[in-house]
Length: 226
Length: 242
Image (cartoon, rainbow over all chains, first blue to last red):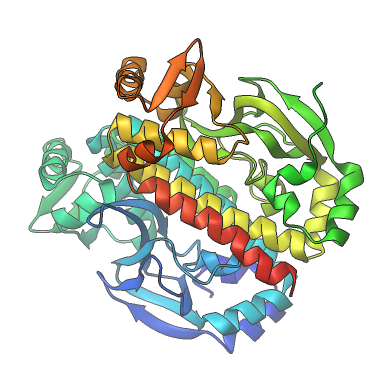
């Protein structure tokens, strides 16, 4: 069973060839895979791990613009002919992934039309996620966005428990820690989550879905459709 | 229709080697884009890609409740209609003419055929896609962290870079929609820039009077996007000439 959906979608022959260049790795929470402006050395196909793409502003304020799990690949600039990352890629959920050296990946991509098609279509889905995140940030309150973000994480880590510091959540949502605290309290008082000392437990998924903005459903449908 | 602009006033078309350009040329058709015209609607079909020569198209993300926010601007540096060659599902975004002018359009099948050849056309379109992704991500963070005035400056500078002139035809309501803020916020920010002599705003026309000072007022987001766009074309020179 192939854990990553993109790898699972390419023809068996292509997958067999890719496998030679793929190396299983464990990604740990907080690990930085790319920094803005730095050359990309590996691409990653997460299966159980989760990677956030963060855009930085003014050197310290960050904002999550994309979230990549088993449905995707980290290292999209290489697909588009760039060798440098424009964003920070930060591991947000520990777990396994398959990685491939950039040079090998570029060579394989050139050789395989099915792989190209799969990745172009994925890039388009990711763009939709980025633009949707931009609009969501503009219009929706922190509490809705936190609910949405917890659901997206829940979908990808496949566990009801995960660890998140408030500072980390603040970067994801582009708000100050107090904003995160307040929003988490609201969700907790409604019995949707339990949040203490950086440990989050999802108690009521259905309730969380109604607390989230519609953006959650939009992104989920995009991924299901892709 | 005014005098025909060369398709090569679009920087992507200008960057193509002669052979590729010659193949596309018979299929390129000049169209006039009126202010407010939607080139495609959220989830709707797209039959053409558009290469603006002297116009700006705004990509807007449309929420389920109908409100929308701009996620990117496309002018003479780019192309509208990425979905056609990336082969993704249709997306909930609209493409609306934000500064009236001209563009060249190309039918879907012609573009797809050229893209699938895998040559310089594909290379350029993919690189442009990366620059567009950077612009979208930067717009997201800018919306979150920066003031309306900074955002307005970013928007003005990005728009000017994508037009052959230093004049924009624009209403404040339209700008407010683009930035996803209240009109009063735009009025206030524009009024301030005007009082300080950076721009002149009258009857739906914005003229930039002092670009260097406008650049000191903008957030870093402008420079990030500009750098990516410049890199796109500098990379082209190396590659297209092999």
